[in-house]
Length: 156
Image (tube, rainbow, N blue to C red):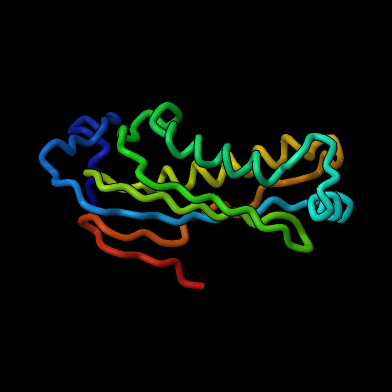
């Protein structure tokens, strides 16, 4: 099996997508921030001392999606034409989901994953004073559409 991110000598390289035609693509990722019961209660009643945790997480995730190539050395600079980050409080913590869309030459899977990871980090940052054991879990790609490889959805 050959990988397009390696040259003939096995060195990492950025894939040249110059000749590819832009197409509509989307990717959705999900992760979870496990929190103690008092943190969940504070998230639900809006009493976290640092402020509106979910709003900050959503904005952090959107910003992260747009800055992915600055963080991942082989990621292409692409137009992030749409980014939605949702953070939903559950009995065990916060479920974070991000969907990123583009009309470009390469996919947005890494942008969606980065959005979830950074949104989760923002949540941890805002509640760590309440519970140092807060943990990020199970950041993963859920689905992608478009591009040469077509559509893909994670099985349950």
